[in-house]
Image (tube, rainbow, N blue to C red):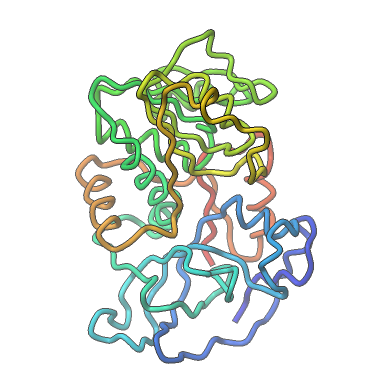
Length: 317
């Protein structure tokens, strides 16, 4: 089979398009033919060498849409069934989705109820799943204002669309470092766009009931300056490439708000069922911004990592 193999850290050219052995099914695992996968920032971090726990060589890819080829769980998974998978060590502890076929643990494979085209479905698992789990943590209310820090990212755009579907009356505000993306955010359903300049939100003192923090530790303490009393902030992303908080003073810097978090490893079948119900019932446009083929996965990462990126990028092998 063809695969994208990372043998050493580096830039996009470190991703090698080459022949790789076909995975062999073992007890507790299922072989999928990869139909599509999304590109994620964490995979770029790993390519750069910022994930020391990942042993190389490795086929990256933490999510996919796949077709069941062979399984050790035939009661739940049928040959030819279209399924999705995210996380669980995929693309990190074992080879992931940047390939024509992938071998995955049965308990990290989820059925889907959808009529979405494959390229649209490929935009959903990690991105919309993460966005949905984060919004549940925020306990959105009809009168709330929601700030999404890092709104032009795949999860940011997805969270905006889902929030609008779940709570139509919500005031939706998105931050971006590049105001030329403001029109695209408004077309995606955002009411207002705020500039993020040098990791400082230019919000003129306005405060928000809920904040979805996708940039991460780099901007969290700044974001908490804009939380209302008894408001809730959820840290989900690490787009800023910073994993730790330094000189964090919780008494003074939480400002009477509540702080929680979500990570996509917590997704399960029940959450995916509910997510696809919301997407289907509200006819949410989940289509990706850009689509690449497997051979050009490095180009897909380059686009996502550039200043002009917006929304979700997928690859169709």
